[in-house]
Length: 525
Image (cartoon, rainbow, N blue to C red; front, top):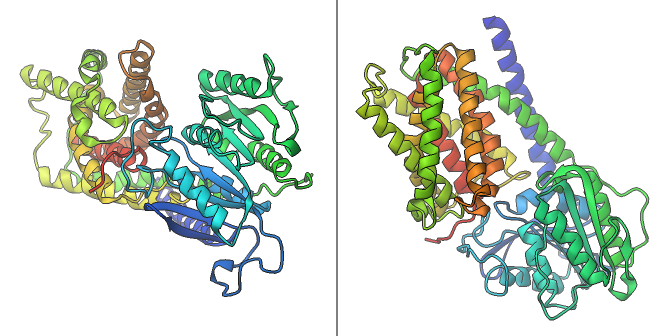
């Protein structure tokens, strides 16, 4: 078995390294693109149709031919321009120049985020900077400009085009909540996912009907005339959700077709929908999951060993205590939350909830002397070393996915938020591991997954009942996805040494890292 394990480790490592190398090559290759810093410290990436690197050509761009029409590409909440890169490349490969930006408080943009994230006083200036750039750059036909936005970016796009009549088209992906500007948006496509929240699937057709001047639109049918600027269409994409619609070839086909009509280009029968970077990243991620098991085994050799407690009636009692602690702590995390000092949008509420629950549960365990004999904090330096090496390895291994899925490099503000969030979350994950993880590795993994499902279910219940803010819904997919990865690593560490504190510290630091890297941040040092 050990030989088989080593062979799997070698194959996973080779696949991961090869996929990451391929991913780097694809990201640096065509379509030509350039990282920019627009006025007011607005990070952007400009993609152009074609091959080569025209940005380094001393000759005036496109001096001998027509310049391509331009698209300003806007990401959603808890996203950045990297998450839009697959769509950006597909648009560029089909003849459009694309400027993707990082909104303030997102990605590499260090300008602080404002909670009122739509309107003239928040995201509007960022959109205007990108529009002004596309109208003035010699690489783009500034008279032919459209805006494409996703989720929060769709609302920002709808807000902007209802104030600027010179933008001749827009595509609102899974978003667009209100229509209150003085101008009628020109040539608007509402495209949303079958797996989108109900509010999106209701609002998008409703606003489309308002623009089309009908009581109710027929999904997939075009209204008005694009040549006159009055085109309107609402469309649902099957078998995708709020996030995966960004990577959907079918959605990209519809968007490209709409933009062809907006810019007066002949319809194409077979647009270029290739996305090799996405498929390569998927292969690398599969290898990453296998490597988590190997990483857990390695960390288990560094962390001091601990005796595994039997899986008995205490396991069910632990799940019950976990549920009680989470339910009772929820009202105490209501805005303004105690952990609001993190300045991470949504994390203040969610992490306050987990931190309060964790502190209370640990206190109960100490008072009840349930921690006696567990030797949780013996040899602390070895445990801390294992946790530190573990989160460092995870950060390094996840960084290559940044150019496709989300930037993970931390700005100074995000680094501080990550450290502080780890301190807030550590008590909860220690209490979680003490209460839930018992018995042999297989049973312990099952119990831990039940505990994680309990966390998500209680959080969802708090949102539905109004105890937790509705915006925290955006944290559910983050927690759900991370919990699966957590358990892959945790199960391997537990099997190797049984050290549940090392597991808890890695989990706390990992969740803090992802939150600090992805959620909008409200401070700038």
